[in-house]
Length: 81
Image (cartoon, rainbow, N blue to C red; front, side, top):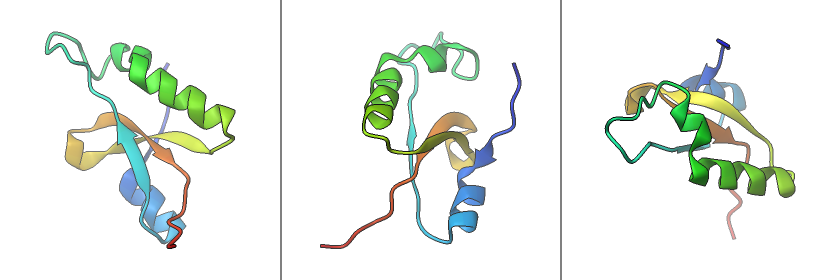
């Protein structure tokens, strides 16, 4: 089902800071990265499970420079030591 997602630029402008986002690509060139395969990427699922288990907010997004490949924004702020 179609859904509206923000771009990484929109998220960064709203947050008024740099942002962290992750992108997962299918290893096979035959896979349709813009289809349903990317949602089933094992590494992506593991990261999402870890984020949710640690109560770290995230949301789907698109990074235009990567060819509009689905990504997700991880809502963490940089914290200098």
